[in-house]
Length: 186
Image (cartoon, rainbow, N blue to C red; front, side):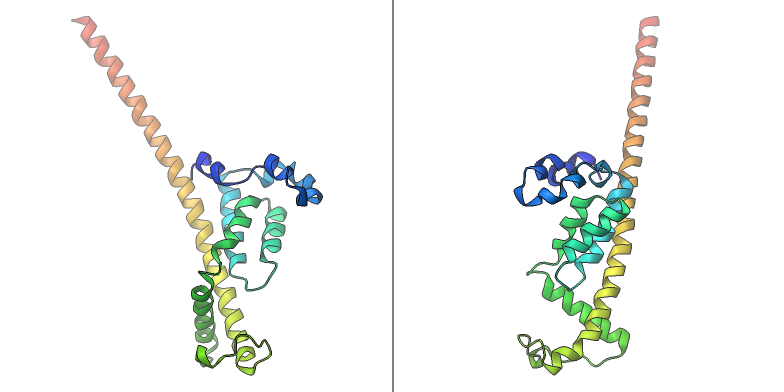
């Protein structure tokens, strides 16, 4: 992943320092490793953000930022990836998590129309929670695992492409100089 394209989308510490509500976090804006764009910090942030995006509880952003700070991952990316689960994607992701959890726990799948979604104490809703939470946790681990290795692999692939391109240009320049020397000798 090219650093320049990531820098376009991620906020800088200087920009965040100007936000009034973030005054208590000013000391974090000076910690360079939390804003650094490198292969390891981006891969770690990807795993953290993807795992926390599967957590169906409020406060997933705080958890993602806290873990990113503790392990030295890129904080803006970990925070940004939380929004993979948004009002448009939540129904699909959480239904898949529930079905996965039901399959893992060998629990019967309850018809969604039978659940009173607005009553948090309804027996139907309470009965799906174990399957749902297990499914969310397993999906979180899976997407974090694959996200880490995909981010790491894409970064490595891009570096290999740059090295290959540099070597190709070097060979072309060398061949061009050789042909110019041979042309001057005649």
